[in-house]
Image 1: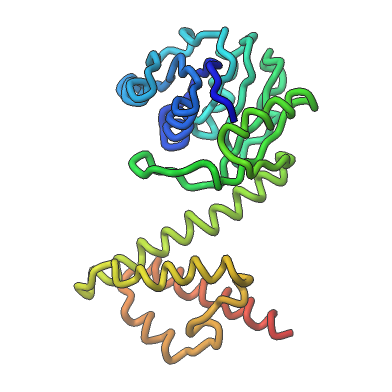
Image 2 (image 1 turned 90 degrees about the vertical axis):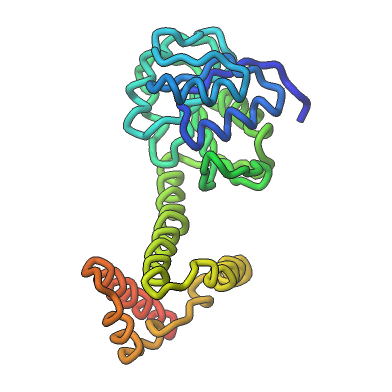
Length: 263
């Protein structure tokens, strides 16, 4: 893509907003403003992309080319009235909020740009391989969103809001829940006085395997064969009742899927 001098307003200063703002700045976009209700957060991100920080929605520049909304899902509808009658294209980046959130908000061109990735502010990430799922309020706007998305990635797909919700749900299972399993694993190892990095090889192999075979075929462990002797030993090592419940429920579910696979 050729560099552009189009102007952008970033609404939000969290993980996703930070990565998007930095990427667009590096691509030659002018980041005009960064909004956050927390003035310090707005200043922190704005300073990295040569933008003006604002903490009052009434100060939003309405002449920008693009407006990227990356705030908590339940805050999207709250910020939209402040974008009424803006000149540019307005996009939110949520996986679970439908495009209908824009209805009756006096915004003529709007859509969705959802990057399927986990973002942390302190970790650098490349957008080039990230799948982007897009929507637009009509065919012309969708084409605009598609063109804009090409500044991020070549992996761009139109999906309906319902499809995107399902994708987001899948991502929660694949990323958020699996990461929580790492947290629990870390607690077990800490109790034993063993560093977490002993798990790095098995974590890496697990991730690599599911890129080469269906996850159901990659499943191993005592729950697949429902080895109660091993499982009961594991349960005896867990002090936290909630963690015991998680172990039992997940093990039962793994075994159920393993049995279905046999049929």
